[in-house]
Image 1 (cartoon, each protein chain N blue to C red):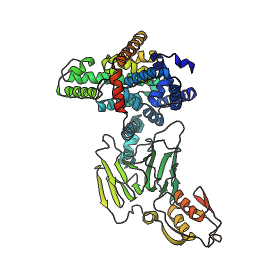
Image 2 (cartoon, chains in turn orange, blue):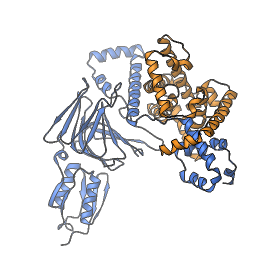
Image 3 (cartoon, one colour):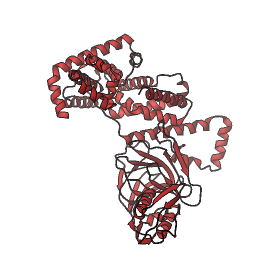
Image 4 (tube, one colour):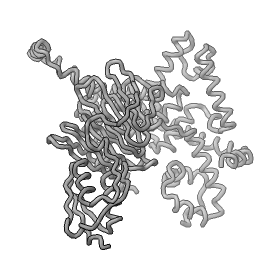
Amino acid sequence: MKQTEYLHDTYLSERWTQFCAGDKTAFSDLVDHNFNSLYHYGTRFSPDKDLIKDCIQDLFLEIWEKREKLDHIISIKPYLFQSLRNNLISRLKKQSRFSGLSANEEQFSNDSTAELKWIKDETDALNSSRLVNGIELLPKRQREALYLKYYEDLSHEEIASIMGLQRQAVANYLHYGILKLREYWKCKTILLTMIIDLMI
Amino acid sequence: MNNYKNFEVTDWVDDPGFRKWVYKGEQDSFWISILENTPSQAENIEQAKDILLMVRGEFDNIPEQELALRKSKLLDYISQEGQVRSWWRGRWFQVAAVLLLTLGFGGYYRKQFFPVPYNAVLSRSGSTAIIEIINNTEQVKLVTLPDGSSVILKKDARISYPDKFYADKREVVMLGEAFFEVQKNPDKPFYIYSGEMLTKVTGTSFSIKANATDKQVQLVVKTGVVEISRNKAGEETKTNHLTLNPNQLVTLNRESNEFKTQNVNEPVLINLPIESQYFTFKKSSLKDVFSTLELVYGVHINFDKIVTVKCNITARLGDEPILEKLEMICEVLNARFEMKNNTVSIYSDGCEK
């Protein structure tokens, strides 16, 4: 398994080099391999699916335009994740500034203009439909760090660079995140087993 | 295995192999045996699994077709951008460009419709190579795809496909005039990109006319059901979605970008014999059956005319690809066949009666 993973990684970095040299099929490959995982990561920031997809598309065009300057990049995935994160957050900020409100993305869902209210309602509906998902109780950044570590299998260093944090901060987020989820799990075991039974 | 007996929830969560199982179902039998052999860990495993699933959240992938469209949009854009760049580079080139334009250089029209390379929309993975077949001959050319589907290319038509199809879909790109007999496989939809038109089928037969210089793309269905949509930047698939039945002809106007559907008496679009051939044989001699196949598919069939003189065929071979048809015939004849470079050899001991 390790061997094939290694081969996969070598293959991807080879394709990256070809992409930087202007190979369009390598670029197409890059899109194939990363679109869905970028999208899934993007859903952590906004429930607006089209916005996320558009951001990813822009990201790919952006890296195509500056491909010649990108051949020094070794960790491709963290690079793409970080770029998408920056683009998405600045896009969301612009959106909320546009509606004359605070530019703080953390307060984003507390806004009450029509569109944002709609988004909020949708998020609320989503939350209640999932009933109680413990992850919603964690601060956003803790959630994000857990996602990158466990779902995307990234290292502490890679997460730190994506999220613009110190390595130690990442370690703390992860440590307390898991701790809280475990506590939550213990409290809700009965309820959860009921939900799981229902789902199966 | 002893190792797992002392695992804490955090150890499970931290185990990359375990995570791969939870998220991707990898090495299922291994992890199930661990579960069975360490019952004391059942609760820990369950907790770890739940935590990992909470971390992932709802799993929401972009539909394959939308992804394909977004990708072709991107590739479209970058090939246009490349063109613009080279046109602007250097003063002499600008002069040359102006000259060419005044001389009525028509290539631009074509390029707009078909981004170069036209087959860039094909997904690629490490193990696959893209095969391109162009029919430069005057005759029709039969192409057998990796899944057994038959494509008959007319003069100047071309098709590109991976040497191995993906596990979940079959994708080809074509230009020009061609007839398709798609191997039935509902689990692996078959997509054809032809200019602005994206066609999706599971197993049917139909003709496509997508010439680079025509102002329209056309398709007529011979058998089965065909779904089409626009393969065009800035548009959503679901809103431009059409389902076609046999003897329906659709025309996509490239300028207005509109579909027009009409019913036709015969599904004839590109004047190939196969469009009006339903392969229904009643006590037909083998010689007749094979000469029909030779004519329609443009193949050559070698068989022993003397040994098989008493053989006759009663069958409806329908819209199956040529390999399926040959298999059906050989089943009846108790024979076997080989096909190499569009030459078929039939090995039969004859039919005694």
